[in-house]
Image 1 (tube, rainbow, N blue to C red):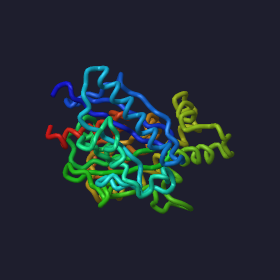
Image 2: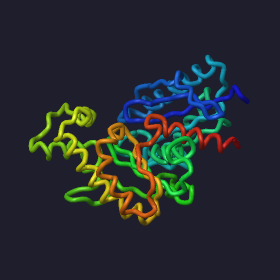
Image 3: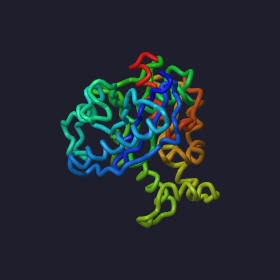
Image 4: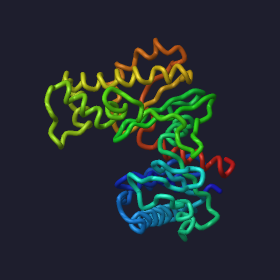
Length: 304
């Protein structure tokens, strides 16, 4: 039993990342790898990337003395996480109404009987932080992910709240805000918009949120103000949700949350305004929370 392992995949728009994990709960970081994937490509191209990353993962596992016992996959939506059928049309359109689960089971490296589980990346991150990270010990947890998009998921009484298809029950990205939706103001494009508004001019096409975060680290007042402004938007829009669901622990994930300390001051008031809330921070495992959530789900599937 001790030499069995899981292969955990994180499917993005340009890469599929993978890592091998032991059944005991350890991520073997030296097995991390990634394979390019074209989310706008043909079904054959996309499935070839999946097959490659699985073959690489199994080879890496066996080279290190492990036998593959299950596969966990974090997949974007719309997707039925219970059946493994994709309903995406904006990317991975070639997989629309295709059983991705059946494809993985068709691979010789997996077979028909091996457990294959799917999770939305944000619900996987919540689960990972609940078992292995900053949310451990809390019953009502909310996670906000900041990147190209704006993600949200939460728990009640220690249980992740899912929609009928297994995605997060509550979405915030499409909530009306100003002349658009919240994601326009609190995601990659929101942070860029905020900095542009603060400096009063249009940004060069090659500027990134990470660059603005770097300016924050150097004490640039305009960059710091732009991050604070986005933090204020998040605080205002999250407050009613946190109160409604009696959230105790609020965590932030996604690549932008590597610069969490620069918008954290705007969130601090939530500790006073939301009576149930006692903890606000970035996730403990910004890079691996989703993988840890998949690991937790697979351990449950196999009775660990």
